[in-house]
Length: 272
Image (tube, rainbow, N blue to C red; front, side, top):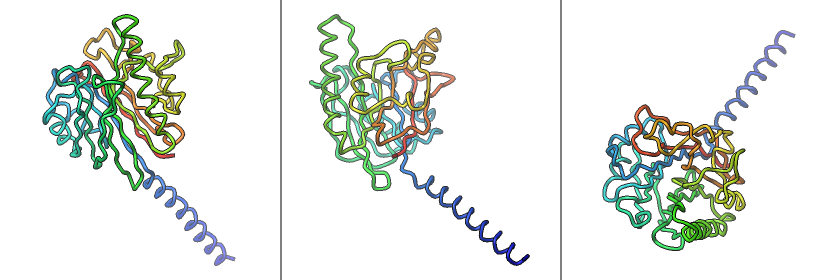
């Protein structure tokens, strides 16, 4: 009887341990990428090295910058974080100086494309990467914001709709991750945002929704103005196809000293 008990104990220990090991291996082998977005306001308040040091500890796989200086700025900030694969967009946002969409990545980037939102004043900088043989498509964006009456409002609508239509055609064949300054507050309990709804309608959503983060009590813009803290101006997002990808974690990076008028945002994304 004692021998039978010992055999059963050994079997159960091995069985449970094996299942635990399988779960751990499955978790370790999960296809994940840790994505961040940061509008650095053409690095006027901090150098590339200072920004790189502030972000380094988060161990991001890829960072999408907006309002980034041209030249070697993205290479410099990326080298501090160990993100040595660099892409600088072709067009500076709204034709302004040093407002490029750029990507710094730990993972090699390929198939670069500049996706026009109707014209060269607003575009998305697009590249592909592979994680464990699974291809993700990364878009670094900086959306327009309508401020000058109905004509400008109509122009902004057209640009965002153009980009949404572009993404819609690709949702059956790509894993889209869109990150950057969207210049809109997402739909919440207080109001529906028409631009956010455009993305929801094609299957994409912001990470805040899945993570259950109440953006009405936070802010990512006007970070240099303490009176704006908690104003609800969360306009920087990580967006993805929720049928194929899930957000496991994410948040706004709160700094003791903000290095831009925006705050960085991040999300840990996993393939479903």
